Image 1 (tube, rainbow, N blue to C red):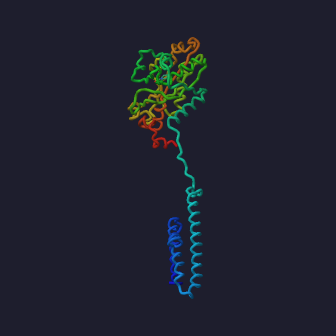
Image 2 (tube, rainbow, N blue to C red; image 1 turned 60 degrees about the horizontal axis):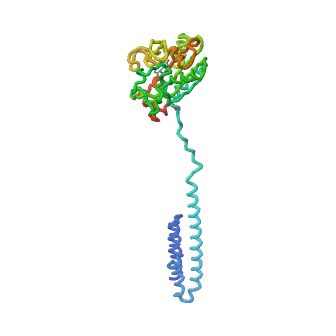
Image 3 (cartoon, rainbow, N blue to C red; image 1 turned 90 degrees about the horizontal axis):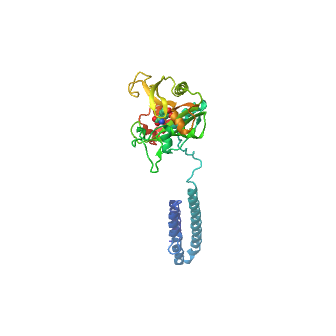
Length: 339
Ligand code: DAH
């Protein structure tokens, strides 16, 4: 009893306080244990004063007061420290000294890159870039392009029909008709865009991309068509030979398909060109006078040529992409390679 007991309690308090650290709950437990009103140890020590012999009361009382001050003071300090620690913890979830997190960097899609390259080649030759609707009417997608109602290109297999009788355009050629209807020659345009057909396999996707070209003026000949497309293909694929094969399209007469020597084997024959050494790259021809009549261009005065090619196919060739559907999968393992 007496002074030794006070010393014991003092030691115990300091040890408990130390152990509680900055944990507010542990500190509260220490406060209750020592300074609690009902059964705190200080309370008990105060009660013990009465039991002491009178000659010990003075020293004991003084020591007890010191102990009370110590307990109160230290508890206050600890509570303040814990409080500011807690506030600091809230704020410091953002450490402004850390380096910032870089957002992942996007990449341009390979089809977009090919489109821009082709547009730029034609822009340098004095063409402008035109646009047209993807939901197209029958007239522009077919009729104005001299595709009669019984033509196989209208087959349900190929065309997405809308309940309204509109179609999802099956090619970019309808924009030829739209531009000729609203603008008189000279016309020199390219038209990139999405087109739709009911088809899906390694080489076909229900949505794909084409770019269309149209030149209309006085005195335009097949020689202009050949020179333009040869120049274009040599710009796009260096070191290829170009050949023209007679073909048929309802909206051109005469028509030609254009091949380049295979960019993988150089013409000796490989899997990509099925051993032929040639790759078909575009369709073209002299604008059929019947198309001019339908869109109100004077066929006596003007001639023109047109061409169309698949942008996805070019992207696949240039980048060696084996499956067309990969281009539209959104798979970042593909697009990241173009960053
Ligand atoms: N529209 C044709 C297709 O989708 C491509 C084409 C061929 C466009 C010849 C033309 C052209 O302008 O003259 O297959």
